[in-house]
Length: 99
Image 1 (tube, rainbow, N blue to C red):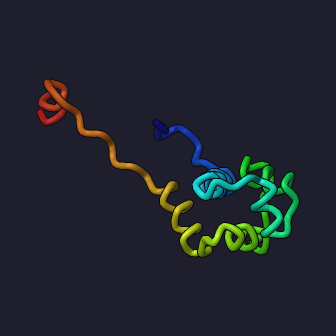
Image 2: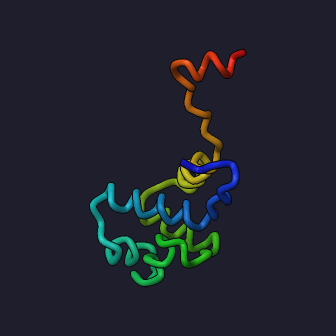
């Protein structure tokens, strides 16, 4: 779990994770998705690993190849940037914090 001192993740890493997750959910290979998107499998792999900082055109091409509206992709990535609420403290420690 990230701590307050952990750096925020980079957009390109979260984007890549989401693209890979969506591609796997469709049961597709890099080659299949890359061909429909008009990019090389190597480039798509680099996007998924967060190595490339792709242009908006490339993101739209891959998103389209996955039949994923760009707005849905953007929302999914943005949701991972939102801070998570802290887990509640249980037991005696909770009472000590309330004092």
